[in-house]
Amino acid sequence: MNLIPVHTETIVSVLSKKEVLGHLMRVTSEVNYLDQRSRGNKDVKFNGMVGQNGFRVSKVVDKGDTFLPLIIGEVEATPRGSIIFLKFKLFPGATFFLIFWSIVLVAFASFFFFMIYNFNYGVICASLAVANYALAIYFFNRQVKSSRKIFHQLINFQLKD
Image (tube, rainbow, N blue to C red; front, side, top):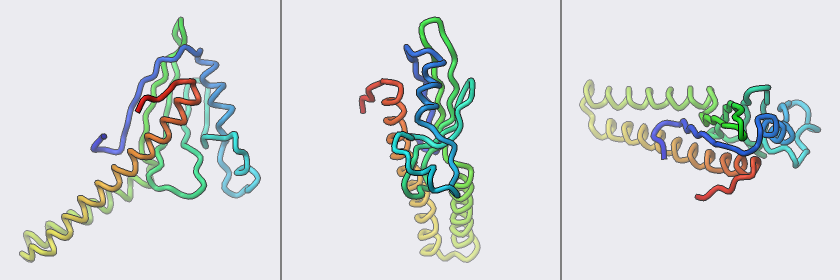
């Protein structure tokens, strides 16, 4: 389990670069939240974009999830297959709010500890800051595990966790 909301992974695949990107293109659609018809396809596993060398996708979900990871991948061809470099990270909006609330709560804790000398409120704010960050890391890692499982199934790997 990472202490920051980023996870990197390198996968060696027997599939060629073209096959990996082709498999990913078949199960990825560009998201259009204004068009309800684009949401009904059950074959689509990822939302995002697949290019010639890499991709930026996220797992399809039925309801919003703040801690859903953005998967940024790069595929390089090798003589016997391909190498897939994956980076799972929080979306920029979720990262902003995690940092914002962490800073606000630590600032309040510091204010109560060092300016007002009210240790009860300082402990409450510090505890909330730690709990906020710990829950964010827990939910992010849980979503990474789920997204990894789908991605590994896509490229015919069996995840051993």
